[in-house]
Image (cartoon, rainbow, N blue to C red; front, side, top):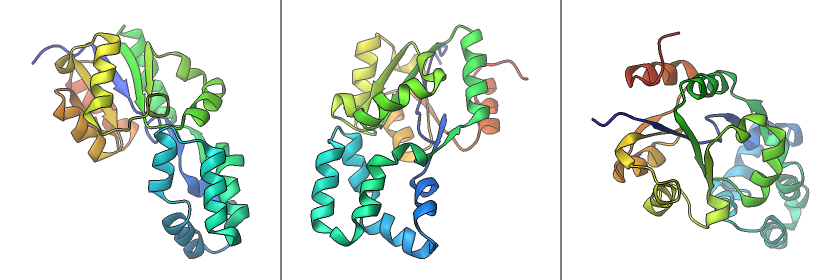
Length: 205
């Protein structure tokens, strides 16, 4: 197996603890009602279209027209979006720093709204540590589409077998493997550290 010289991180739920429930638990007293709202109004599929590059203002306007009784909650998805981030996943940020010291190529490849990534970038210094970033909202294509992985490889002149991709989504991990990358599913920082050590990217702590 070629030596891995490039590590590519997903951002949401690998490096940042993002979950709409962090916000919506402040807006709902009833957990079941909140889950219904997230399953039927501001759905994962609706959010993915924002990650593809859709404009928040237009998406919110259309959804409010369809569901005016939920206007406050729908508008919160845009206006209070940063409250969906509980903060950095500390153990992952420490691994990022350790890899940086090993002079490994460090990149990010993330499904992320263009607007919200641009607003998030100044808030978290680790996002400036990457050698390059591919954001779905900037490119108009989402993981696990092979096109976004190939775009990364071409833009940064990387060889797929020498890349390790880390993501919390099994579908995205499978997408990376399909284009020839090594890939691991993120569950927690301790497990990721063990994966990185097995691949020779980190010395045991």
